[in-house]
Length: 366
Image 1 (cartoon, rainbow, N blue to C red):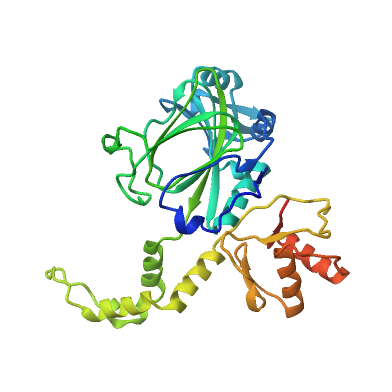
Image 2 (cartoon, rainbow, N blue to C red):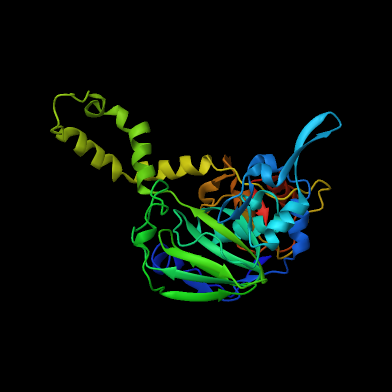
């Protein structure tokens, strides 16, 4: 599965991201089938809590699994008959973190991550008709809904809480959802719908009509995270931040603390250090190549294995939680690979790039 090369994301972050929904017709080129999904389910241990069934409410785990003895080891398995029965009657199968089980889904999530420069994860949703699954709700992260099989109808409504944080959920505020949708679309295979966090939405499938889509969730760094990081790593150097709060005094009078925090907040170095720390904390999975058959031929293109855009300037970059320093010659080779401008590789260049692949520091773009 690949994103269409026709997609233009140059102005997406400025004009669309966190501002309004966007329908990208034919944005994903995919031949994903139910057999692909079946292969992901084979051997999936449901005790990890990521295989769920929703039928108006979450179905209890024990209703569609059983504990079996497997040569002296106990494990859970899915009960196919019960799973199929509930799906036929309108339940939705939820596969959380499908990007960790399915290489095709992981590739789509990685491509979206690379385009927008943010971390992503993917959940899968399979159903076979039966109307809407979750009712009207908002998500606390941005979502790219990628339709892979069948069709699904989406209704989108104006937000009533702008850019909600994880604790600001819609469950207790459903009465606030506007009555009239501002967008009513049917996604077909290959379509992508971007839904900003906080936008009310509902989905439904026609009776007996199959549908499978993935929701690529975008998890961004927020100003709140930066402020928290400052307090934990930088502000301790200021005596004003180390002073005790007086229990009997409810008037905040420490102007020194406010001035110090403002200076640190607007420091370009602090912001760069915060982003660096975030990049060093990211681990991203890539596909295995045990037989080491990955070839880097003429015209091949690589990307740094990080959700955050980096230029590897000065021979230094952060990939998969690792700070990497390389010599100027290798830096030029890497830049050509990132730009998709590799010609014939010298043996030294190929060994260098294959070494980065083996260490999970770069990924080969299909």
